[in-house]
Length: 604
Picture 1 (cartoon, rainbow, N blue to C red):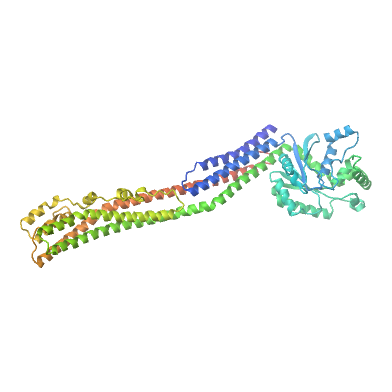
Picture 2: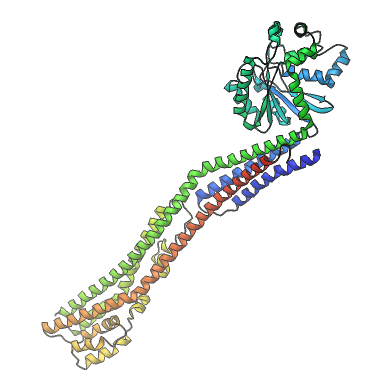
C-alpha cells in the first residue's frame, strides 16, 4: 500500500511537470521575427524551463526525503518555548528506545537531560526520536528554535521540515505571537504541510500552590490567549493550519518522569507539584497532555493519509509557485508585448493609409506628367508654326525633333514621379515601423537604382510607344494627302477619325505640317488651332492608354501593401499564440490544483 501511494504521488508530480514541458516546447516552437517579440518569447520559455527544473528538483527531493512507512512530526517553535519538554514527555510515555538504553547503560534515571534550563538556546541541531504509540511507529523531530542565532542552523531547520508530514508549532509565551515571529514561521514552514499550534502554558510550581490555581488549566486568561494564537496562525497559514492544543508541558513531564540526579531543578519542581496535586495521575490529567497524545495516536493510525495529504499540499504549493512565476514573467514582458500589439495595430492602419495615398499620388502625378508633356508639345509646335525665320525644311526638322523626344521625356518624367512617390511611401513606412523590424518592404521599391527600385513599374521608351501607339506606319497616308495639295484643315479633318490613335496621328502628322509653306497669319492661326485640337485629343488618348500602366503600378503597391499587412497579421497571430500558450498553461495549472484539492483527504 505504501509503495502504491508513493507511485501515485510521483505520477501527480510528473503530471504538472509534463504540462510545463509541453508549454515550454510549444513556446520555443512559435514563430516570430520581430526582435521584441522574440525576446518576450524566449524570456517566457526560459522561465518555463527554469520552473520545470525547480519543480522537478523539489519533487524528487520531496519524494526521496519522505518517510513512507511511518508518521513524522516536527516540533518547531521559539527558543525556550518548551519543545524539548514535550518531546521528553513523549519519550517517557512511549519508553523510547534511546531512553531505555541510557537507563540500562548508566543504571540510573536519565529523564530531563534533553531539556534546556532556560538560560540559552539549547537545541542546536535537530534531533530525531523514534517512538511507538499503541504499537504504531512514528518519529518526532526536535527542531532548533527560530530565535537567537537561528541563522547558524537554518539549514538544519529546512532539512527537518523537508522530512516532516506535519508540524507542531509550540508557542511558549502567554501572549499573541508578534508579527515578526509570525512572518518567520511562514518563511520556514512554507504552505504544504499541516500545522498545529501548541500553546504550552508557562508556569512553575509556584503558580499552582493555591487550591484555586489547581481547579482548571483553562482559565479565562488562557482561553483569551488561545483565541489570539489561533486567529494569528490562521491568518498567517490559512488552510494549512489545523487547530490549537493548549497544555502545560512541565506539569506533564513532571507527572511521569524519573529525572537524572543532575537535574536538581526539575527534581525540586516535580516534588512540589506532586505534593500540590496529590499524585502523578492528577498532575497528568490537569496538564491536558492527553489531548496531544490522542491527536498523535489518531495521526499514526492514518499516517499514510497524512503523507499523501502533505504531498498534495506540496504539489499545490509548487503548482502555485509555477503559476505565479509565469505570471511574474508575463508581467515583466507585458510592456513589451503591449507595445508590440499596439505598434502592429497602428502600423496596419499606417500601411493601409499610405498605400491609398501613394496610389492616388501615382495616378495624379502620371496624369500631370502626361498633361505637361502634351501642353509643352502644343506650345512648342505652335511656336514652330509661328516662327517666320524657319524655312520649310527647318520647320519640319523642329517639329520632328519635338515629336521624337516626347516618348523619352514621358519615360523620364513618369519614372521620376513614380520613384519619388514610392520612395516617400517607403520612407514613411520605415519611420513608422520603428522596432517592428521584420516587415518586408519590397527591395525594388527601396534601393537606389531607379530601374531596380521600380522593378516592373519601370517605364521604358518601348512601353511608352506601346502605350501611346507611336508607330510611324499610320502616317504614311498623311504624307500622300499633303503632297496631293489638301488643305491643312482638310488634312486634320481627314486623319482624325481614321487613324489608330489620335496621338499617333498627331505625332506622325505634325512633321507634315512643316512641309507646306504657310503664308499669312490667318493660315498660321488655323494651323495652330488644328494642331492644338489634335494634340489635346492625343493627350486625352494618351491618358486613357496610360491608365493601364498606372493600374499596374497601383496593383503592385496593393500587392506589397497586402504582403506587409499579411506579415503584420502573422506576427499578431504569433503574439496571440504565445499568449494562448501562457493562458492554456495557467489554466492547466489551475485545473491541476482544483483536481488535487477536490480529492478526499489523504487520497490521490
